[in-house]
Image 1 (spheres, rainbow, N blue to C red):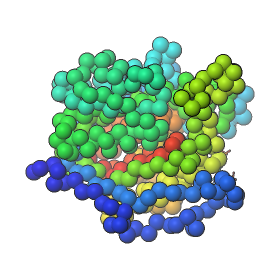
Image 2: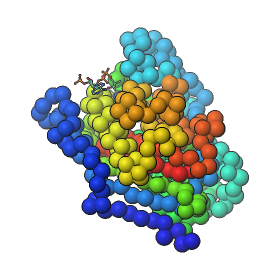
Image 3: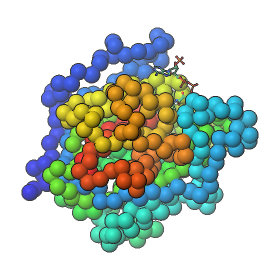
Image 4: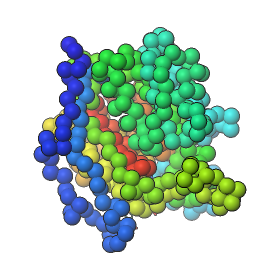
Amino acid sequence: MNPQDSIAQESAADITVDVPGPEKRAVSTPGKDEQRLLFRGSRRTCRLMGVGIQSIGAYLPDRIVTNSELETQYGFEPGWIERRTGIQQRRYAADDEGTSDLAVKAARQAITKAGVNKADIDLLLVATFTPDFTCPSTACLVQEKLGLDAPAVDLQAACSGFMYALATGAQYVATGNSKLALVIGADINSRIVKPGDQGVAPLFGDAAGAALLTAGTSEQGLVCYQLGADGAGSSMLDRPVGGTSRPMTAELIAAGQHYLKMDGRNVFKWAIQVVTETIDLVLKKADVDVSDVKLFVLHQANIRIIDHAMKVLGIPPEKVFNNLQLVGNTSAASIPVALNEAYDQGKIESGDLVLMCGFGAGLTWGTGLFRW
Ligand SMILES: CC(C)(COP(=O)(O)OP(=O)(O)OC[C@H]1O[C@@H](n2cnc3c(N)ncnc32)[C@H](O)[C@@H]1OP(=O)(O)O)[C@@H](O)C(=O)NCCC(=O)NCCS
């Protein structure tokens, strides 16, 4: 079968799902913030079949950093981190590890598990918002370290990065323009958080996850997916300094402006909206019921965001895979690291429907219902 036959992209006009309009969306404080909190995503979804995930790999750095270590070191309120997020510990990369090093280790595991020849990898995508360098791309460093003969490029969609990279890699595979695509999500968040910032630092950890994509049957692939962006919320989660708009200066660094800055409360409120609405949309567009989905793997940001989605969408706990308790929010690595663990535990098998949902800075989100 020509893989092209299985690609169908739907226009906004095709969509009949009733997603609540902005007027129904709860926002607690009127005014400027209210505008930023509205879920402004379109209702477009896409479908891309004929793609298989051949293997998954992951890498977590050795160093475990517990909540009590951070509470003691920085004077954080005891118990606050776990109570507000569910996170108990996270991993920090060693001083001599860069994001590309984590990515390479995850990729090697995926390559070994698949039993493929790395010479057959013909596309490399790295999702990261903590690159080794601003230039060149982390993907080029990974390409060189793995010794691949493949085009290599970074994608930056923060914590949605893996979903963007997965959907991008899948296009190449579905069209036949890639036979074996290596898609990686990797981040070293411990390098960009302000260590003593209780509302940000303890939430994040470091990790990498990798997936090898290859042609699948016409039943396999992204049964329905949605990628979204809303730059109106860009300042809710950003690193204000270090790019071309505001280059780094000694004064700005001294003021801590180069660290990740997050309006946690408003990001939380946005996240609980976007997660439930995008998952609901994708399921309805695919004409799939929650009971048909084997596993839900959501971005591991905060257990309360995930619990909220489960409650609103009626997802039973046994269908949700979480590991944030032990790894925290690892941004672009979050979903592939969780997928890897779930797969290794036998929770995902060929033919299963797996719902993945990433969300984060940009603002961005990406939801995919994947038939394994
Ligand atoms: C940083 C953080 C832990 C701080 O927690 P906190 O100070 O206890 O604040 P909360 O998360 O409880 O509350 C945030 C807001 O959401 C509201 N909220 C909480 N649960 C809610 C729910 N189920 N439905 C609607 N609103 C809810 C709260 O009332 C609060 O609004 P208010 O300030 O108007 O009262 C938390 O805000 C957070 O996790 N934010 C998102 C972080 C994140 O996921 N970032 C990465 C995205 S990739």
